[in-house]
Image 1 (tube, rainbow, N blue to C red):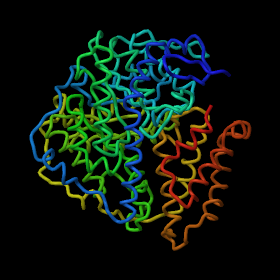
Image 2: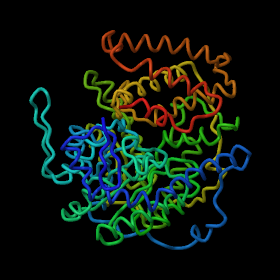
Image 3: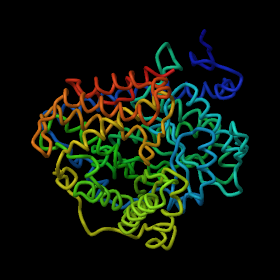
Image 4: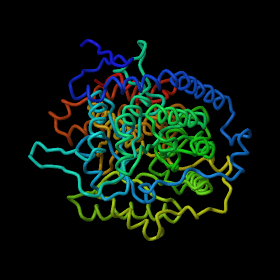
Length: 529
């Protein structure tokens, strides 16, 4: 298919009249302007990540930055909270697929994180249909009719939209500028902002965003500069944008206060993200044996280093008037087993009670069926719209954030990483970014921590709790058994019509790689249409 040139961009993905409504000349010129001005800095910051990794490999562990101590020791506040972000006690997350968008908006949650990132498989169709769906959702004219004839329409009250673009490391292979792929972050963010910012403001809301996978305050500074320039280009008052940053990397945790400071005129909070944070720990300390992790299901938010991380985020946010958002409840309702469903809801309730008691101002759920459970849990401890007054009388140190965690590595844990890692990746290659697996709604972060743990255990010759050494041959034997179980569950026709060969080959290649691959999404993206 031939390329289409619009507003300085070359679009190589399939186009139709609906997609042309997203790639208008004005929208493309807007995105191209941002790319020209800020693209080189993005590349420099990605190179800086590699330099920092080399320092960690050489033994220079992360620490709080001495050159920014004045920021951590001074009084300053983020921008005032917009009315529709005042109460964020429950936020539902999910991809920008049309039916799921309507269900999320109607869920009763205060906010919906509309996800172009980890819960969205970034096929060309998913990405651009997602932009269309977001435009329709903002305009309140989104609807969907299922193949069975069921109509999905918006209710009178809907959740506030907070969009999450892809991370700085991703590129959009279907759009080029000067013959090179463009930043997926600026593509996702720029198209959404251009088409929706003014309409959101006219409806009494605003352009609100989650920013993923930041590793330093300089990356936050880049986003803030983009916000300022974008508001200038569209004639929107400076400070209209609001951003919540996911503190889901260990280096980001050490610079959480500086990240918030860089974005302070546009900031509304920080968020704790468990699986990506664990993935970051394995990735950053991949050459340090003393950071060998046990089964990931044993690493709950109550282990010392995660407890320190959560309290640190709460204190940073509340000192500066920002919201501290809790993590994800990935459970989904178990409709055919009332006892199992009740147990799952109790797990969600206990986790949300912990977050609320700690002082978080809100939390995440992955399914509409969990919204009320989370709301009720937070209402027990949080009588107003936030807990900005809550501060912990503790000073989190570098040693607290880097404390090792000990525990067993079990056959069950290894098998689960193999099972869920490949099963999710197979779904992702098939275009599904939010996939229910064994009564949990999984996204890309789960597959990333799964393959990174398998890699780490293999690298250091870890042993199971029964004394057996982990080897790639043992992985392959158990994988064959797990795949056989998946085939039996799916049926031969569904299994053979899927993407299991490609998913298995890529996943196991990354597990066995001598050098740790930074992101599984990068090579996996090349397999997507």
